[in-house]
Image (cartoon, rainbow, N blue to C red; front, side, top):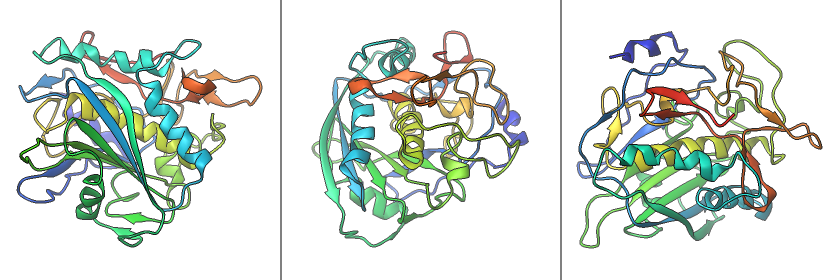
Length: 310
């Protein structure tokens, strides 16, 4: 296998810590602004995939303005809603359907669910993985992806040191189980690692930062990481779906294509992106409500290569 290609990275693959014996977190997006060679294949491990109507519930932990919340809620709505122009977030997400041709499950329909606000920092400002799962449990108990979004003044275990985001799942219960995602706002803690290319990279080739499409480096960086985790949670929700490498630190649909956003990408360069003439912002996908986003390349199982929208 081509797992050895990651040895050129400035960061090693993380080995995610099991939360408890009946649940786990895994599939992290590393804080690296690099272009990795694509793995040779993506193996299906015969596990359950998300199917049917899935609610994506957003748990906002800490201080976020309404304008900031709208950036990510509009992104979730864009996953299955048509934008006015192509290339679109919905087209990007539909690439994932190719994975489902290798299983008996039907491709899921994702819809924005509840938004839960916790701006009082009920669990404090220093969170562990156990705290993240506890917050995620405030969303729906089944048929759901519960997304925990932490503010820029919240420290999370492993944040910036080894990951920018990760996904996991809850223990089984009588009503089922849910998948969850955590993404942190890195703007004050490590934007050069987790908000690249909208901030000067901390390591590697140096290039001027790009203009963020929604005017918020932290939230536009979160959108990138959320996009990566959505792809991963849909194709590998319970640690036995599609991935390559060890299941404790898998390469998944989007994390297999780190640092690639458009054709022509190379280390330190995101690729030949589209540029909004009115704002000079760089993007590669249109969303609902006139939004623009930067979404990562997806590993295409049909071609065994990383594919981009532009």
